[in-house]
Image (cartoon, rainbow, N blue to C red):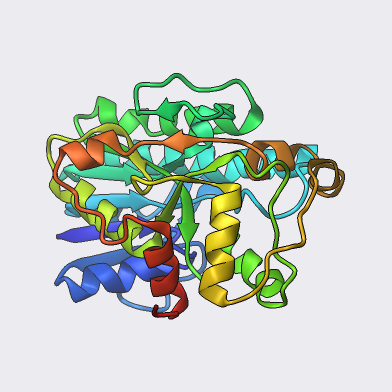
Length: 300
């Protein structure tokens, strides 16, 4: 296939591009600077500009655009940036794909399990409604921004990503330094569920979604065995061979991170990947310890 990708330089994109190329596919990277290579095409979402001609004839598009949710406190300015970095670029891409003479067959536009909010220990399938907090509303709007593509007959899929396990960034990347120093510990009560996914399975799931013509709409992209924060902490400590006796009380997290603490660090989402499993996707790393040992290079 010929696949156009936004966010190709980010944590997921920088892994997805070589993954697809190694599989024999051609990649067109949408970049916000002047193109420097033959596989790059220019776009400027803030100005509403995009090189539509470079997208003619692509078989698929993968939209990974969006500022990191976990970077800094959610001030009003930060919230505005989180929204604008998702909604505008997604809408621009969807509208452009809808107007092409040779439209792609599929648009995979990422979303997040933040859509579900704090739901305790309830199992969450794709059929659940969104919560009412900022992150849930943002996730719902993010998915809605891709509707122009669906309206033009393009199959649109929204993988709702769990916590992506990669040492290169994201939540795990931030945990590694304190945990390696023996300063890791349970966050808040530790009973909140973490729905996680190894980066290898993110790539595998995206590839699966590109192929499966029967999959559309939201698809939970999280491993089938979510764990509590206490279990995650204990497992990461065991893999790194470090103690995990430095808990972070909920009040301290709220003091440090404000609203973001409740929406991400203390929120509980026990997500079940019903659609992926029903469609035959087999997780390469279905258990947490196996996933952590793989991504961190720590064999048993």
